[in-house]
Image 1: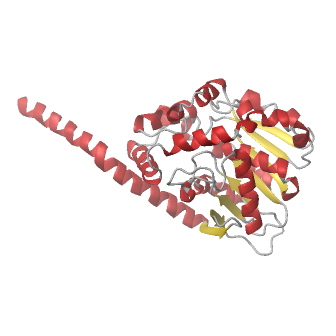
Image 2: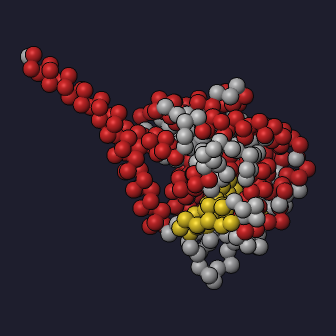
Image 3: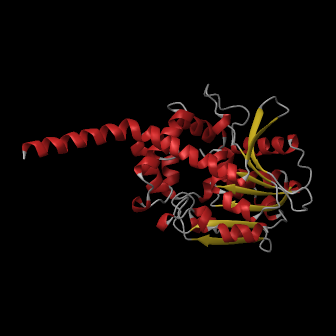
Length: 337
């Protein structure tokens, strides 16, 4: 009996040690291998272009048919989402749009654009600055004809800023659970105003990551990936960004983007004048971007050109392990076709 007890205790200690040290290492390798394999199979290639200000802008590009007349599709990730993760989520949509040129832009201070010195002023220090950054990338890539623009979450807010400033550049505008300060949920806005970044996108510990996924991204704990995968995701972020990075970045972005707090109100005339097809996709259970508040966009954009639909998902995940990208797949595909 005593030997059996010692065996159980020893096994528990080994498991704890594995959870703390081995799981993150193995999980990280597993997540990276799966992502890179999937992106390579889908044909995404990492590229960069030099901007007029000297900065190197990174993006992932999916090869396309030279004889196609379809416009390019430019995709903007959400806050703290790298171009690699965003491309991974867009693989099925890109496959359905096989003849189109697809470019996923790395946002300033994200992924390969990490600002290791915590200087968040250049190349963009605000949401409007990020819209200008996308314009610089477009110019450097010689995208001279109108392209379609898809923005996820914060990328949706940036895409809308871009649409207002450079409407002649766009064909279609697709906003997937777009983030605007005016349409954020009250609980999310309360924490953001208080600078409680570690409760939001600025999470750092494993426990903070779990809370963020379960509370804000909409992942039911019962549908969470295995601990190996979750530990791997946490380890990857720790490798990519130094401690305190996202709290500092989001704080700087919020301070420099006060004009964005009233963007929808202040730019109503410009948004109404945007005479291109617009699709807004809301998550029925979104805890970040209030789906009821997002209905406002239907009356702000031109009524004849804007369609709003709601899918069964939270901000990133829904019941049964489905992602918002999967839940919205048909709507996005049909709109972009």
